[in-house]
Length: 131
Image 1: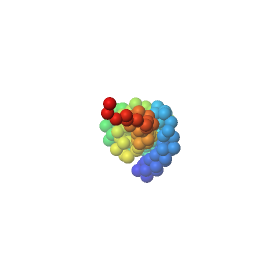
Image 2: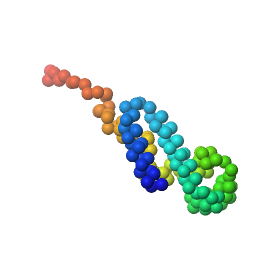
Image 3: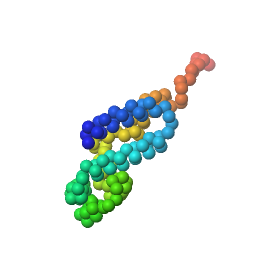
Image 4: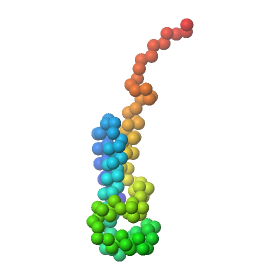
């Protein structure tokens, strides 16, 4: 997963730098949500067997009953990745601790780097001197 996150960060930084001129932060937030859901799906698939899923969910702080119930579900991995139980087990903070940059953070950095003093493009100021 660490190698996957390193490659994803490289891709998202490049992609975000290319589209940083757009003024659509909500699109980047939606891409972040999708990316984290996809990573949750990958993590769920890594835990192949129901026993491993239950063990890993319990290790992430999910109660035993809920961990057992969700680990033996017949729902698909994409649907489980969007469930509240997996979002609680693998929250956004978990992915930040793993080193995932996502889309929104690089977007904010690129946008802030291109901003001027806050008044738009630089304006010439004519100073007439004292009185």
